[in-house]
Length: 303
View 1 (tube, rainbow, N blue to C red):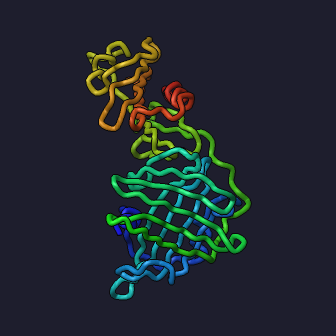
View 2: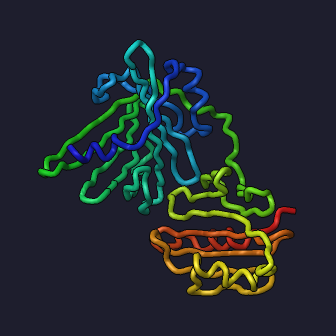
View 3: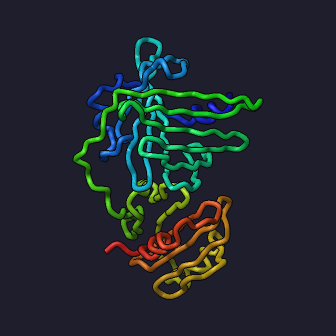
């Protein structure tokens, strides 16, 4: 049943903590009135057995601008009486377009109706479909996975969740544009709401994981005191193939493909060096040219 290993054997975290309480579940709920949003408690009789045995399992939906982020948490019964957690993070992008899932699989999801979301996924020779469905007037959620093994036999695994801790209706408005700042706080770039930002790495990525952004600085040196000096120094790492702007105020060009695809390199002057931006497009596909341009043009020195 390799198709199910594809889904269930993702990288997970493990640590020992007390079992989740209802209060904890409520605090992890989404901030939207969406029928899926919130945290669901599994009917353990429908969850496949594993070792160590499971005490409970939850599935949480958090609404985003174009779908949901999800987190499935399993509470394990460890030897000696303690408990531990494993979790699986996921993304549901309801655009009908393919995107990269948590394990690198290619996914395509769309909403069939108010109570049903249908996804297809593939990784190498393995493929499956996953259906998220509400029933019983929205009080039951079922996560159904269907796929074929190497012999062509169809397998179905359906996990039923009830005990829904709904997301609060006093929803907080979605955040606005987000600022990604360099390590020395000298430069910044702006990415849209809904993107995932990693402040520690000075990086951001789009909801479909199709675009990665990284901002950094380069200090002025004896051989580099302007963008004109910088250009030949960075050409080795970012080989120019198409120049959009080459002025004293901004250097902006498309660079030759890296192993995962090509992208844009942008640089602007700062007080003690230059602000640098890499916008990488997976498989050299620019999903939204206007958004990418806005990000490129937002690179600037922090006032």
